[in-house]
Image 1 (cartoon, rainbow, N blue to C red):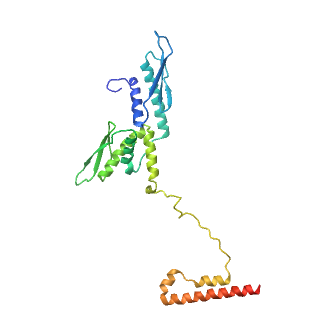
Image 2: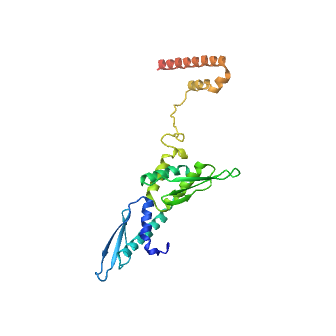
Image 3: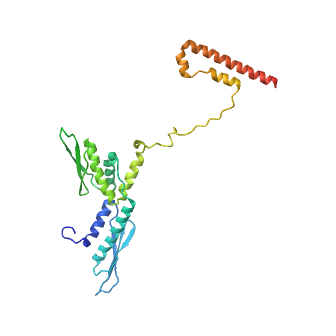
Amino acid sequence: MTKGIPEKYLYKNRLQEYTQKAGLPLPTYRSKNEGFPHAPKFWAQVEVNGKTYASTGRFTHVKEAEQDAARTALEHITQIVKNAGIPTIQDPIYCKSILNEYCAKINLKKPEYTTAFGNEKHPVFISSMVFNGESYKGEVARSKKMAEQLAARAAIQSLLESGSEVIRQIINSKFNIHKPALGFKDLGTDRSNLQIVVKADVPTETSKKTVAAFPSTSEMKSAGPHANSSRENKRKRLIEDSSQQKKRVHKQF
């Protein structure tokens, strides 16, 4: 009961609040009298987000039938949200951006933040804001910017609990865009985990000697310029010897 109004008269209001928070079209009702003019028996249906929910009983007044249909819809929606689970945003870095995009999509005024500073001994910030007629307060933070992000996260969490599909879509889109910043690797460009297979010929005695004669880069640097010149001459002689040996082999055949 709210302010003296019985709960059975508040279902339509609750359902309308849900659709507004979720960014959905307002519920639409239709009713029918299955009784007589002097003894009416009304039932009603309500359509929410493309789904239809019906009253479970028959009533003497149309408004009562509509309230019962709204109650049925709320019970089903609440169960769906409960079964689906409510995601939690661990990193609040994009929360203000997410909330601003949500406001733009459903034509709401952007929230205004009020941030309080602790004191010199406790240099912390805490932010609060009013969004869509509701007040939200964030957790304690080390900076004003992060305090506002935490306040925005509190509002987003409330929207998620209400089952807003719009806010879910924005969150999914935002975190897919920023995956690289969040530590995800792009498998299309990062090839560090790919195995490279090289097909090698069976080495001959000459090729073994040639490979052995080639020093590593670090060895060449440490040996100095004179040693490098000597090694280069030796390399050229080995290449020439190898070439001459191949010519002799071809002549034999």
